Image (tube, rainbow, N blue to C red; front, top):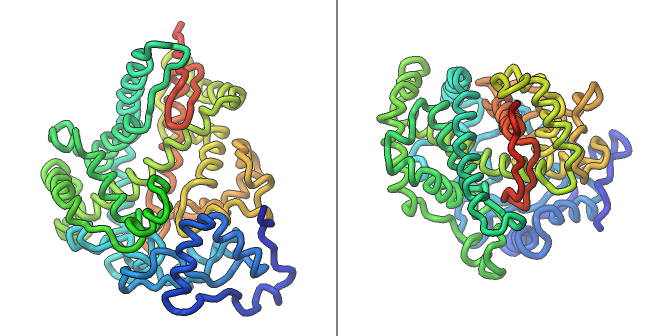
Length: 455
């Protein structure tokens, strides 16, 4: 196994020239790309270079690169320890223009020519307007957030239960929750965030989830190790050129018209209160809805359910169930809203622990598993963020494009939904234990759902 990151022995060591090399033009980036996607994988790519250079800060190339990514400079200074990582979030030190998924910016055609707020630097005057609008949208959505989530989760779980009950052999029963959860996420986000019910448009209700999945994949696949087709086909077909936006344009246009018609109140807020044009408002709403919210939740929430539901974690589930029901009260319980989940310390710590390991931005997984900061960094420790010492570790949790102890504002790039994301994940856990005494998962499928018996 590659050794853990070495830590600088002194301030002098920390200020030495940055080690590493980009290699010769074309060949250096190609070599690093093949290491990243094929020969080593993302984790080993960074671990090996940190060990070779005896430094957690080093020069390297990151994908996408040669041959057909014109205008993309793959050369970066990689930072993979928790202490140094904080510098990346200082808007006065780092230019955040066109930075989201590394040095690659997908075509503006994915957003009908609009350069959405996430790609704007904090010094750009349009950034403050679009960020303030996003914060305003979330503030207004918070009024109905918990209720819309509960309604969508109830529908999702009813569908999963039906699938599970249809199994011919109850002992081997299994029901995937991945697509039902994505549909739940999409419907609740449309209603809470945009004020638009997908049921008002049959095509959106039926195909909206799949449109966003394709829209996201076309933008992200050139930068991600996929693993669904063998090498070298993955390199040749998925990592050698930008994927075209025209494939998903009819679907995106359908969602655009849906927001224009059924989310007119949200669009009006952007126009009248934030000085954003109608077209820019709709494209920013769709990006927040589709990329930030739906895309992020589609990665995070299935993994959260899987981690909590793993066989052998019966004691964790028992303690989570007891905490949820103590806070919500007896019977069907009260609303698992923002105030309630703030009182669920173990639920929140579990959510942070899952987010620490899996949400990617740049290359955070190694920084957020820095052994100099996190004890037993490679293990799943749901109690890690409990108590005074645990809460102190939150300054090293960076999933929101900033430390968890920071606050999003129009003047920074921290995710506007930082608090909402954590609260939503906690609400999902609370709804599961409101409804079930226990559950187990095999990957992204439920294999057991012990329904709660109300007295």
